[in-house]
Length: 484
Image (cartoon, rainbow, N blue to C red; front, side, top):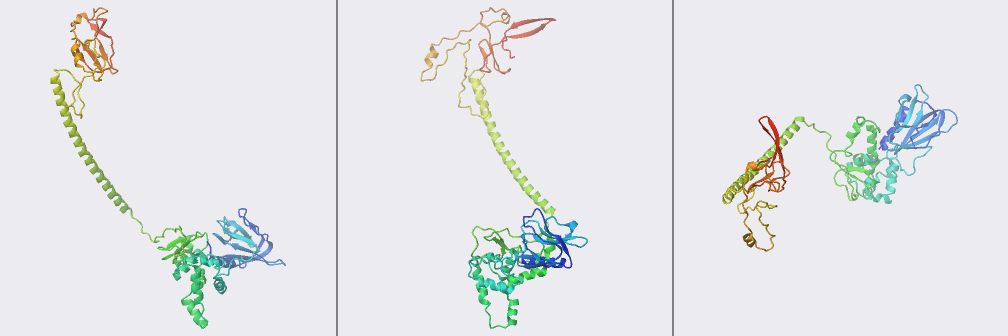
């Protein structure tokens, strides 16, 4: 935001570029701006400027006739400034224009990109603003010390310095630089700081030369409020909207504001103040500042160093992966060894069962499960017609030994020959083939021997095509021990 030095420099700029120029016609305002119209129109007039704190006044003086002079008071806001350009090169955000009579035609524009600035036609300096800290040093000092008992001086010194009623022209970066030079914490009570200035200024017995010498060597707080802005004016200040290279001298002059290693906090108005050391006793609660600014000189990082770091990290990750794989392999080896042992035990138990059952085929136990102590029990869901054994009763405390003794022994059925298969009577018992949903999961009965494959039973008759010495015929017969 433009402060007192920048507005003073803007007034000097207008006086320099408008010296010798004649303006005429109507003052134009852009349709975008919400500020009031300037109802001034004259055939020929001149423009001059004056500044006071954070205000600039343009004085429009007619050259001929008895017309009275008019004035326009400007407040720059965040980005206001003046520019004199040719009519063809008028800036984009030129909200108020004064046209010259010379050839080629030129325009003095008030440029404000953010549109925070304002103007007032035939206005005066604002009464709420105090004397200028640069051009009215004595009045400024007297006004501050006179109102020390006012309520605003109960606040921290950094907040009182932005009050234009007492410090007209002081802004954010100026207050940081002034407090830094005197090593005053920004959140010290303003009355405490200024009472010390008031007591030290009572030097009636000193001569004028000694007073001037003390002022130059050891200036107090109020004296610095006048001297520091004058230093900025000598440096040239900065123009809002210009490039950073245009005010590098000013940035190098700053010792505290946005300087590396400095602390910062926001005051109760939301403005950031920069300082060194402790902030003071009146720090607002819950206020946080911006991050500390690092040094401007930054060494470039080489690409090779990044590559080596990535290689190192990738090597570590691959080593960890290898160790994990080795651990997994070791655990898998132990598991496979245990499974092999269990399989061997299962094979031994199955062989023992075969010997005890005299060649009967039992269901092979699964690998990995203990089968030594578990007796094999054959379960059949449906009783066979060839061996009409009685069904086992439900286990509800009844004994099964008596029923097994009373049950009759099954009679052996005579074995039929292959020649009798096709000439069977209609009422003769038939061989049955049992099959589940799968084709290979089949169970066939032949005589009293049984081959078990599934519990889902299906009886079917198969037709087979047989070729015998150039003659073909169809013959229906029942399969006997054949897997279809």
